[in-house]
Image (tube, rainbow, N blue to C red; front, side, top):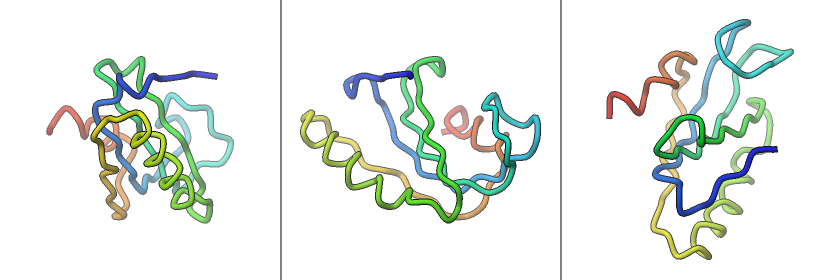
Length: 97
């Protein structure tokens, strides 16, 4: 299991992402539409992505995440966008910011 110190998180994104076979580094047996919460660090190798099926409970995870951030004293908000994007657009999103 991968871990990330809250101090190393520079942004948090919640995106609705369409994933097909072979389009991500993740090994998914069920391509489709997912809510992905990305804890973005300075280097992509340190970043963490949490995957939820579209009908999963990503929205229930957000308050827990926000509480952890608040407890750490860091000032971060979750950037939420619910329009469907491609995996490639999700991976390159931060490079265009």
